[in-house]
Length: 152
Image (tube, rainbow, N blue to C red):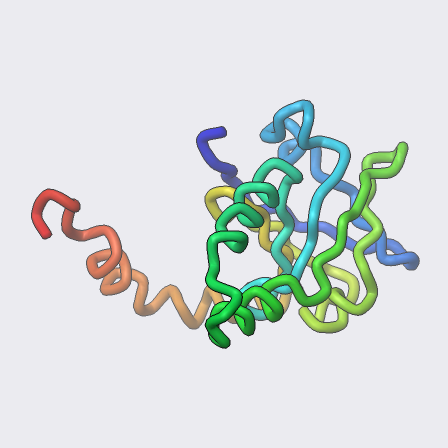
């Protein structure tokens, strides 16, 4: 997988189900089209991992030292609320109510590619964040991507 791309606007139905956009499904390998793991994101969003990518993340977590309190705390907080969700026969995902509430997602959401996972944002929260962050994007781009590793 070379990474995901795109930004997709969706709506939840009354039961909290989201139809997976066809462009999102096209980016998934066949083994990753039927089940995902959804968890709290680092920001005020949800992170949606393919099963394959979740295995990679779990491998990293297994390497943490469980005798260090910050490692235990991170693993605990990172996995809090993580849930396996399965695509139904109509291509929808039933998103856990607790996680939706935590992220403030009510009806309209945005699915945003973030390299190897999908972020699920409340539409208004996402648009506000992107508007606020855009003003500093030039400086951020320079700080993060401005110098190649060879120049450091």
